[in-house]
Image (tube, rainbow, N blue to C red):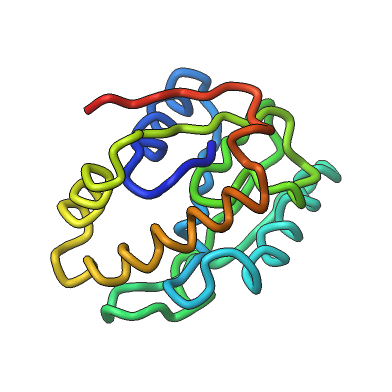
Length: 158
């Protein structure tokens, strides 16, 4: 479940995971303002490879409790082999995701509204980070062709 910040993908993914009794993983467990897509991906890939081999996969979340990211110092997450695992968040449906069975792109056309949703969620002190993040997202989605490759596109309206 991929899409830009503030589009509603986390809410949609939570609801879908509950409906399907699926395990939910968020790229927010990994990404930081300085590393939105790259260095953390192998940690997630290793955990998913374990699950694909019918073994439990593990990773540690990024800890944001002190107001800045401490990579791999948060709670441990255990992924268990099961029918459905939903990977949710920016860059989750990237071309390099070889474990992807189905891609859903969640969009909200109004970039300003998305910014305000993200700021309302995470705090006014994050506004400048989100402005830079939105710029990064535009470039990432254009190069990765994320929306065009999605199996489904869901448009949120509120």
